[in-house]
Amino acid sequence: MIARLPTGNARLDEILHGGLVAHAVTLIAGAPGSGKTILAEQCLFANASRDRPALYLSTVSEPFDKLLRYGQSLEFFDATQIGTSVFYDDLGDALHRDGLRGVLERIDALMKSHRPGIVVIDSFKALRDFATDDADFRRFLHDLSGRFAALAISSFWVGEYMDHDAMESPEFGVADAVIFLETKRAAERSARYLSILKLRGSGFAPGEHSYRLSSSGIAVFPRLADTPDASPHVTSEQRLSTGIPALDQALGDGYWPGSTTLITGPSGAGKTLMGLHFLYAGAERDEPGILLTLQENRTQLGRIISRFGWSTDAPVTIMDRSPVELLIDELVYELLDAIAETGARRVVIDSLGDLMLATPDTTRFREFVYSLVQRCSRSGVSLLFTFESVELFHVTRLSEVGMSHISDNVVLLQHIHDGATMKRALTVLKTRGSNHESAIREFNIASHGITLGEPINLQALLH
Image 1 (cartoon, rainbow, N blue to C red):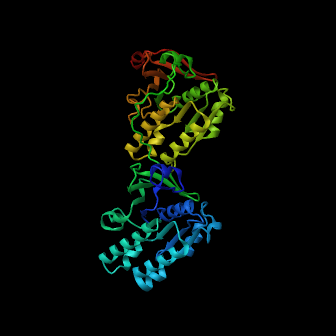
Image 2: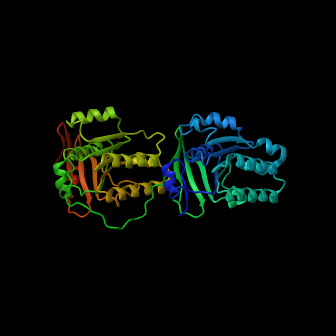
Image 3: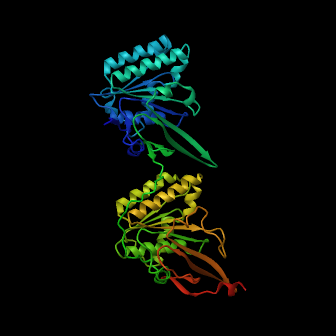
C-alpha cells in the first residue's frame, strides 16, 4: 500500500486517486498568480504535526515575511502552528553567498534542527540561475532529491514554469509528481485549470480540472467525464406525472423515473412553467425537487409560484444562479451535493442554453451533460432540461448540442399564427420505451395551470 499525502482539498485528492504519493518530490508549476503558493501552503498546513513538522523555504522571489503576511489572510492558515509544527525560513542569504552548495548546507542544517516531514521550496525555478552550468544544476537536483528520499521527506518544489519548460527543465524529470496550474481566456471569460502531468506509482484523473482561489484556499472541481456504466441498476415501473394530465396522456402516462426530458421552444412559450408543473407535481407526492435556474431570480419565481397556487413550503429547492462568470464544473458539483442532501427525485435545469454559453469548450459541455444524465438515471433522479430555440414560429430544429438523442422525452413548444391571434402549440416528438401522441395541440396557460386543447391542423393555419 502506497502512503498518501492529503492536499487539503477532498476533490483534488479524488483526482489524485487518494492524494499525493508521500515521501516524493512534487513539482507545482504555473504562471505567476495561478495559485501555486496557496496550493503548497494548503498541503503544508493539512499535513504538519509536532512529530513531523513542515518547513517552508523561500528563495529569491518572495521573502518569507511577505509569505507570512499574505498567508494569514487564508482560512487554513493556523497561526498557532507557527513555530511548533510549521516553520518558515529563507534560503536567499545562503544562495547569494555560496550558491547551490550553500543552499544544500542550509537545508541540511534546517533538517537537522526541525526534522521535518514536509519541505516546500518557493521559488525553486529561481535556483537554476545560480548554477554554473547544466551539469552543476543536475548534480544539485540529484543531491537534493537524494537527501529528501533518504529521510522520507515529502517535498514541494514551486516555480513559475510554462508549458515548454516540461521538455527543457531537468527538475520535471526528477519530480515524482507534476501539478500544472494555468489560466485560459475565451472571449470575455477566463477560467483556471489544474492538470496532473505526472504521478509516479499511481493513476490519476486525466484532463483539465477547474479550480477557484479564495480565502478558503484552492477548491478543485474534477472534470465531469464519466465513462459508460453498463452494470445493472434498479429501476421503478411506476410512471411519474408531468403535472399536466393531458400531457401525461400524450406521453403515454407520464415520464419514466430516472428519465431525461428536453423541453425546447422559443421565448415565452412556457418552458419554465412546464418545469415548475413537473416539480410541484412531485412535491404533492412528497418527492423533493430542485430547480436550477439561470433565467429567473427568486422574486420572479415567487410571483409565478404564488400565482399558480403552489405552496412555498413544498419540498422544492431553488438554486438561482447568475450566468455571469459561471463555472460549470463548480455548479454541477453544487447541484450533485444538493441532490444528495435533499434526496431530490426531480431536477429541472433552466436553461441549457445559458450553461452552454458559459462553457466555450463544446466537448467539455457535452461530457458534462452526458455524465450528469448518466448519474441521475442510475440513481432514479428524473431530469428536465429547458432549451430556448432561435426560431420564434414554426421551429424546425432542436438544441444545437446533441441533446435530443440522449433525452428519453422531447417536447416541442412553439408559437403559431391563427389569423390575427398568436397561439401556443405543443408536440411530443419522442418518448423512449412508450407510444406517444404525435398530434400538435394547443397549449394554454391559465391561472389554474397549463391545459392542452384540441389538435391543431397546422397546414390549414399556414394556408
